[in-house]
Amino acid sequence: MIEHHLQKKILHTLVLHERARFADLKPHDMDSNMFTYHLQQLMKQQYVAKDEDGWYELTPSGKAEGVNITLPATTKWQQAHAILLLAVRDQSGAWLLRRRLAQPTYGLSGFIHGEPVASEAATETAAAILERRTGVAASFTPAGSGYIRIFQNGALESFTAFTLLAATIEQQEVKAQDETGENFWYEGSDFTAVDMLPSMANLVEQLESASGHFYADLRYDI
Image 1 (cartoon, rainbow, N blue to C red):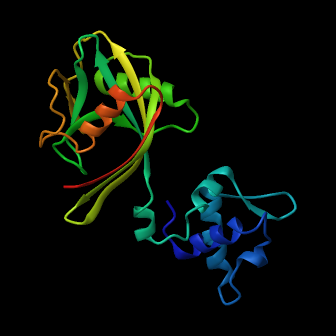
Image 2 (image 1 turned 60 degrees about the horizontal axis):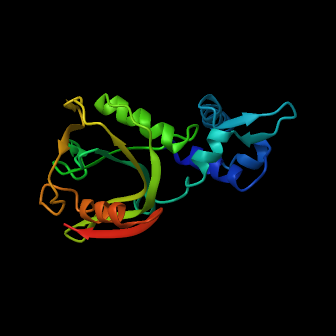
């Protein structure tokens, strides 16, 4: 993560150009040694590369980092965080859920979740997340997508862009707990309970009523 203002400025300049010379990147009133140090730090982190003709350009990692480099922290916070929701059910109708032991939504239960991986299909990542967190193997099918916004006392607590993937398996023993959550089979039907994530009732309803891939844009004030 880039913190220094000068390194952010270099990345921002390169975002707006295909490539640039040293003189195009260095502020006129800055000491060359200091500027060279920060430029080399970006090269060491493999955000910036120098070609044989002396031009500087962004690496693929630099392009990914540079997309939002000039956004203020408040704007970044309001951008949706991408997650995969894993709706796992056994053949009798019980759901495999996870009680959060980390913020936000500490203590609330819902679908097991994780982050997508750029180099993998979402179905592959979902299977790997489930096995890592529960010890259970499953094959997933994409079932829905959308956004979930959770506010607490009017302040944004979490904003996620979700892809929901579904799987039906035979019920089996799961890993009980790790540092960030505890897993359990839920055989009840009340997804509006106070210890459930507020989105659960809507997501389960969408899953059970949709004839195909569903889309939901959900907001909750807790």
